[in-house]
Length: 93
Image (tube, rainbow, N blue to C red; front, side, top):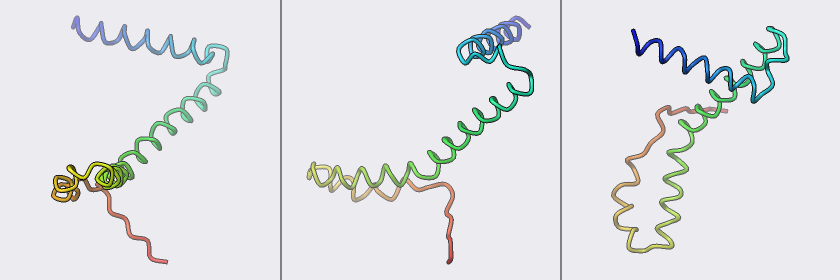
């Protein structure tokens, strides 16, 4: 019970700070909703992009690092296939 009260109090404090920082306290309810939906949508799109494209980028960075650090080339050749994107999408045009 004590933990739930502390979590609720910290969530309320976080939301209060969020409203003050972004000046949402001056907006009407429907304007706050639109703004919050846009913020959440931005976070979701960033997360989706990170999950889909980051493994490929890390593999590319590792290949490029192997050009500059030849001692890493043999270690990277065996481990480059480990990181793969979670969603494989094929687009046929």
